[in-house]
Amino acid sequence: MTTFPREGTAVLAVPAGVRALGRAAALLAFGSAVVHLLLVDASSLGSLAMLGMALACLPCGWHLWRNPSGRVWAMTAAVDAAMLAIHLQMLAPPSGHVHAAGPAPLMWLGLGLVGAQLVAATLAAGATARR
Image 1 (spheres, one colour):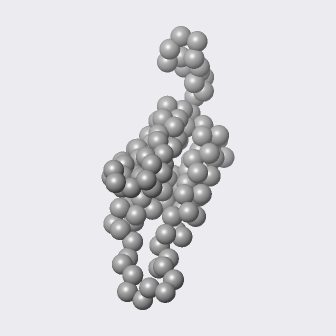
Image 2 (cartoon, helix red, strand yellow; image 1 turned 135 degrees about the vertical axis):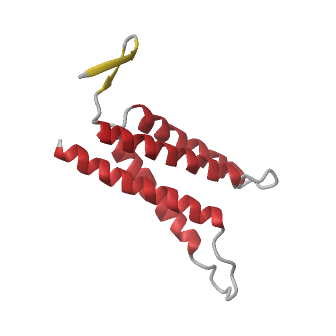
C-alpha cells in the first residue's frame, strides 16, 4: 500500500507499531537537539560544534517522523551508537584530577535520549523482521 501525502511523492506503508516507534524516536531526536542548543555558550568557539550537533539531530528526527523505514532506523542507530561512543569518553574523569566534578545533568539527559533511541531502533528492527 502506498500513500501520497503530496503530488508526486510516495511514502511506503509502514506498520502502525513501527510508525509509533518512529514518532517517539523523532521526539527523542528533537529533544537531543534541544539539549545541544542548551549547551551553546556565545563566548565559546566550541559552541559552534554544539550548534552543528543540534542541527545533525534534525534530519533523523524528520525522517523518523515522516517515514521510519528500515534504512532510516539503521542510519539512526549508527549515528546514535557513534554519539554514545563519543560522549562516553566525556564521562571519564580527566587524568590527574582527583576531585573532578561529575558529568553535567544535561550530559546524562542526552545520553538517556540517545539510549532510548537505540532501544526504539532495536524494537523497530524486530518488528520489521517479523513482517
